[in-house]
Length: 241
Image (cartoon, rainbow, N blue to C red; front, side, top):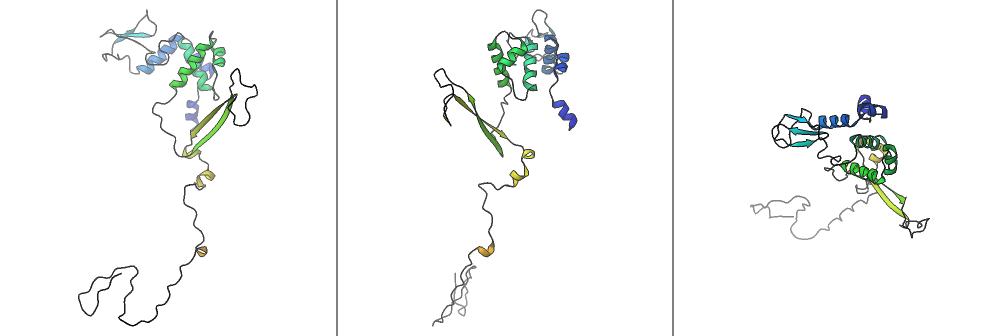
């Protein structure tokens, strides 16, 4: 478990810089992830190709002459930022548990435009969403908070109580795994579960049936549960319940 936890942790800053010192190292990593068994043309399936010198990080198929970039189909495709900047932004996002803002990312990457940092963060956040995600189920924890957000005409202090003036309400929900559910919460009775059984002595007891008074006429048989079958003999008259 300790070794697995160690491998799941992101690289340190020094390890990251040693592994991805420039754009060429980043491109080699993308090519290895895209073609782990060697180059394969996405058009004809050819296994022979070479990297172009005129176009950075682009491979050309020897059979159909199709050119494929290592960033094709990723959030980095068509971007004017360097691959090193993209990799550094990914490392910063994954190594900060509290997240990072566009202003902080702009300062750490040395970007000249706040808009570039904001677009970079937006693309990375969208790429981190699992397209096959399902609805939350089981035990779900929900919490809310409020962030200061006011227009030019809103009061500086914002509204009081639950007033939306000067605020933006944010809600979050997370599904808990069975291992993360405390024992006290698991043993707590659900609101939709049946109520606990009370003491049998406190439940009302049925009243005994009153004894029947003798009456004239033929006797009848009482069968409160089962149904008796009809007899063909005249000695036993037919009786049913």
